[in-house]
Length: 224
Image 1 (tube, one colour):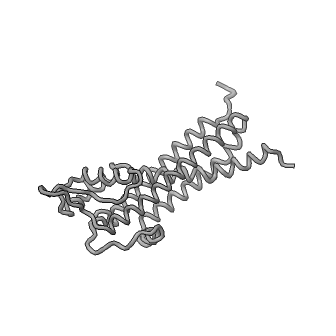
Image 2 (tube, helix red, strand yellow):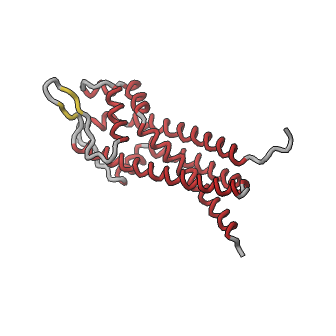
């Protein structure tokens, strides 16, 4: 007969294999899309903001995008510029709608990230308390392998235009309007850069998780 502890061990392994990749991928997405530095790196490198013929600097545009992604339940996406006699919005209604759809996905990933973190903390705490570190060590390696695989798939999904556009339609985004300034701002080159950033962030996070896992689950040393 399977004991309660035996079932918990099995459940622990399943949660670890699933939730470590979820934690890393969702945290990578939130870092990539919520930090102004990621946008600013691309804007400074491409000087794409200058092509919008706006008075805003690359730094101001990067901050505006990051502020929107970090805002709580905004009604619309818009960046205003001072024309000298009035405040004028840069983006059109479809740009605003598409950014709202993108933000909703990032917000969902942030909730998944929190759930994954809570579950992992509980699983590690209970198993370490019950001296079941071996369960954690065994389950970690397939979790790490799956994380690396999903990081690669995320890179391709963001980098490859056909897959990326299909995902955009899946989450409800509409085709860019002719002359869309947001499409010009977040062009294919931007997504290629974002794909690289997300891959790098996810691999770094995987390494940090592996180090923390090792520190928490390493067997006791016999010889010093």
